[in-house]
Image (cartoon, rainbow, N blue to C red):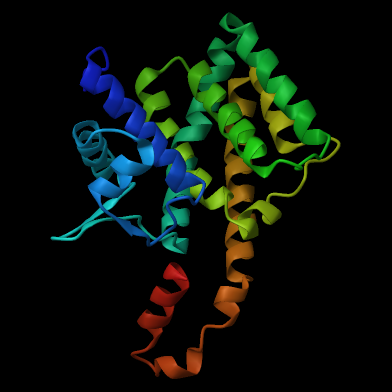
Length: 247
C-alpha cells in the first residue's frame, strides 16, 4: 500500500482506527458489521475502508461473512496460546539483539527504564493508558533489535496480544508491579549488553505471563459455568476442549 498517496494515507488511518476499536472492544469479539457501518463510524468514504478491511482480513483482525459483511474474530484460549507461542519464538531473540545494539539507542533504553519505574509504582488507575505503555515497552525492545522484519512481525503479535490484556481477567492476572519487576531485570540485561541474559529473561517473562494468563482464563466464571456432564463420554471430550478454547 502506498502511504504516500491520498487513498493510501486514508486507508492506513482506517487500518489503525479499526484495529484499535477491536483491541479496546468498541468492536466486540463476535460483533458483525458492514463496510457502510465502519465508513459511518470513521466518517470516511467506502474506498479507504474497503482497502483497510482487506488488509485487516489478511492479518486476521476481521473475518468475512459471505453475503453479509464482516465479523470480529472471537477471543479464544487457543488464540491466546498461539500468540504466546509466537512471542516465545520471537521475543527472546529480539531481546538478545537489543542487548547487542542497545548502546546505539540510549533514548530507547531510557524510555524502557522509565516504563519500569512507572510499573513498579503499581499504578493502574487508567487501564487503557497502562495497556498502551506496556505495548510500547515491548515494541521498543523489538525496535532495539535492529531487525526490521522481526520488528514488523513482533509488532503485529503484540497488537493482537493487547486484545487479551484488555480483558479484565487477563489484566488482573498481570499483577500490579513490585519492587523489581520482570521487565526491570530484562531492561537491565539489555542496557548492560548481556545478550544471553536478555534472551533467558525474555523467555522467562513470556512463559510466566502465559502461565498467569492461562490460569486466569481457566479460573474465570465463563469456564466455571461449562457443563461437562452434557458433553458425553468419551466422544464428548473433543467438544469439551473446543468449549474451553472458545469460552
